[in-house]
Image 1 (cartoon, rainbow, N blue to C red):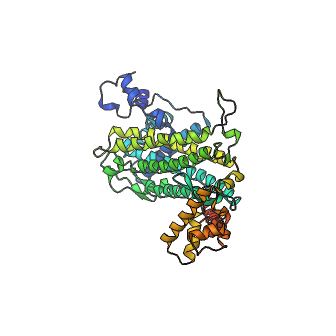
Image 2: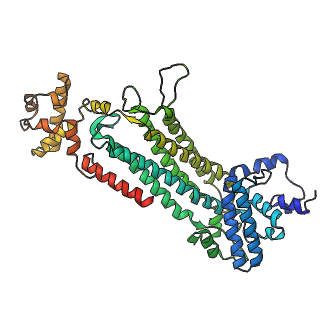
Image 3: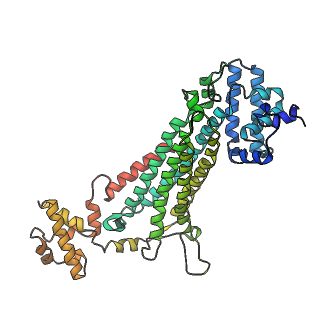
Length: 470
């Protein structure tokens, strides 16, 4: 069929008119993006609806034509949602598919939907609209995870466990204190995503290919139709900007890094050597050769997929690093990395929530681990500071008492008062009241510390955060 016929014109590439012959089939397959950008079909329709409304509002097309376009777009949206319309993968991209389908349904008015816009500003809008859907969904899942951690923490404000630095016993904390630390990392993740939305909800549409339009487009009206509060201020920047993709991917990388750190601890804690956590059999796997094994595979997979998200971020940064203004086709490659990062992180957040919510905690093992490793050594120094000794001197006395306990093969609590007095005459029998692990925890009442009352303050603030953002 000739290029000039109605059917071929509707489904040919949007740019085909300048060319006497079509591209090679292999070239078409190489440059087509419909398999990647099809997930933005509803976003493309939303953007096209707003654009048609603006064209009618500005008198660029008749209001009747605008209404007909909007009705046609609504029918496409409905049919995609109910499954009666399938994506045509012979289309070059999602924009071509929507416009061709619209023209098939309503005829000539469908050809006017692209008036005053380019695929350059159209894709920039579609991506922003997609992220405006994705980010709240991810944030809700983060809230669910924080809520799960807070509930576990609230039940374990008295249950002590070792705190570590350099993976060595450092000072005693509580399970609640540790889980609150995880929660605050996720709160920052939530807030970073909220902050990114401020820069995403800015409309680029009307910037055209790079230099705007000679038609009387009302960009602010169209932005308001989309629920955006403002418009981009420079047409060159509008179509060449992918900062919002990189910013979101950076935030996703941080989320995945946090999940990976959590999972590293889960993997360690589930070992025989630690035995702090017992993962549900629903969220563990076995071995094909060793029948006794119960492996924390899901935690390991989340940890492993962190590199994938980092790779997506690096791909975006590398793609953009030397591009001249304005749009370059390299930028078509942004979506695969962005969408992969989105899919990976949102699934990892959900899986981690299921895994940690169903886990059981071995409080006895945690408590017993606090009995070794001299986690109370700093408290001996603090005791002497309260007696008036300079901290650096007190640090040395405490170190001396630790060496003495090592030589005797006992804990600090097992040293005699005579042993302690051999380290410093300032030490009295009340030393034995302040060095049990529970006493060490409860003494740490600085804001943010592990004492029960301070952890409850954290939990209450986290609850307020959850309520505010529910």
